[in-house]
Image (cartoon, rainbow, N blue to C red; front, side):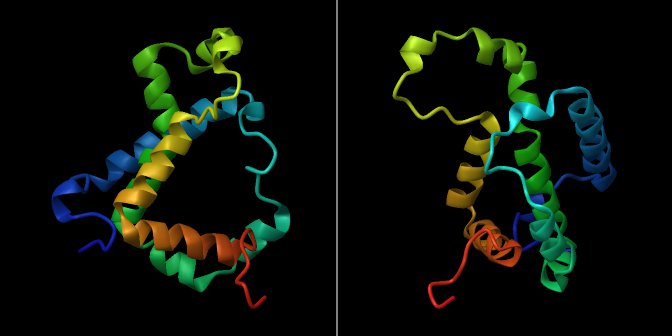
Length: 141
């Protein structure tokens, strides 16, 4: 199946591999504190209901390339932490004075922004998903 989000050579050969990675990440995040995401990052019940009821979103998520991109973005924090030591430890012990006035993005936020910039289809998907959820509104209402 062709993906409109990733070229065929970038797709994981085994879709089950992504499912296993996702399950491990979910298991790991259940053990971590859910306070990692600040206010504004959590979806409300109404937003989740709009997302759950979207036929467009279900159709888009049938694309294996899109699912792979989302999995890679979602796992960026864990991948970065594994590569550089504990993410939580680094975050809690870094020199806060050196960081004053700087916008600090998490590896997940960086991965999301990179995917949006380098993949126009993914950028359009994110925009439409935020409209669908009610996070963004069109200028005409």
